[in-house]
Image (cartoon, rainbow, N blue to C red; front, side, top):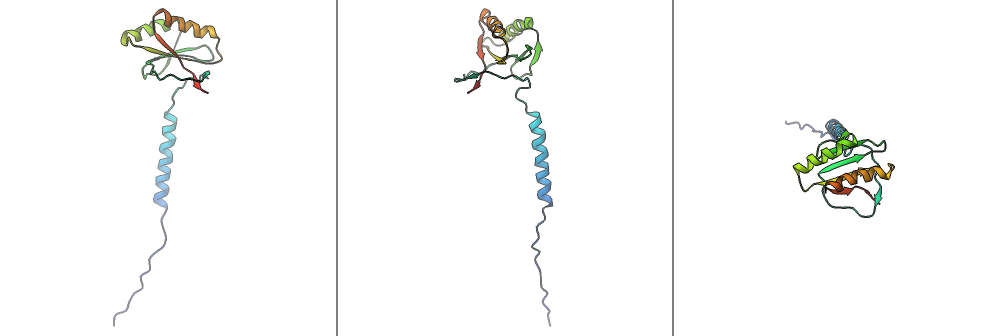
Length: 135
């Protein structure tokens, strides 16, 4: 005589592997969010209704403390004195004659500081873009 055994199917679900995956994703996003910093120099740009589509190769940044920073291409900005801006831009022009220079100027700095940088570009026939934030 054959006896039938009752097989019970467990209706439980283990969440251990799901918790591990969520924890790993959390760590991944925390690490990558601290690495991605578009601009480490704190500059509050003035507002403008129209934005340009040109891709600048060189950046000149003036922060609220009147510190000057320059960068070429995708390199990180480094601080320079005002007298070092013209030689830097001329070196960039020698690398790329079709240069666009983007000027990031904090809205709280005196207007004469912006004009001094624009004057350097005008004397050397560089194409300048004054970077603003959209309204």
